[in-house]
Image (cartoon, rainbow, N blue to C red; front, side, top):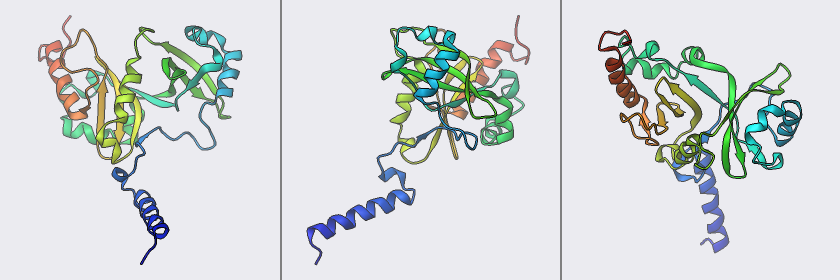
Length: 239
């Protein structure tokens, strides 16, 4: 017979083994991940921010309501820009496009050479920084983006928080990406076998619901319909 201490030990060991075996639905850790950096490079630290504040202070003017001591960043991630003409012309059906989202050569074509990170003041997102790494793994700011309405939560932050509670991320890893497909801007969660897109709300668009998770094929279908309206089914944009 096992005593209480032995039973507790067995339970703990089983739990750990279950987690290590990759059965993420039985573990509490959310599987929202960020892309790997080039070998030997590290994430932006608070000391990096202090150094950048000294050398590139003009980029921090949009965040002047937050003391530099309180500014932090999320891990960096990539942005991707895809135009209508690239994949929505009708030449490529959704079942052909979706696998391409997992093809490095295809993604590299639409990716940028820069990294983005969310700027936080305490627990509130106040904007974004576009940064790049030099050959010595040192960070340099190339652009900054402030939140549209400082009084309202940033759409990217809202989408990111919603992503953490999705049931899919409890079962497999999803990499954070920032996506622009002409009329849609949103959070792209890139999974090993499927992708989730959480579009930001747009007051002038009614084809999708803001902050509702969609599969890539669902977004593709919506944009295909819009593309046909904008080109009057001719493939050429109306003047």
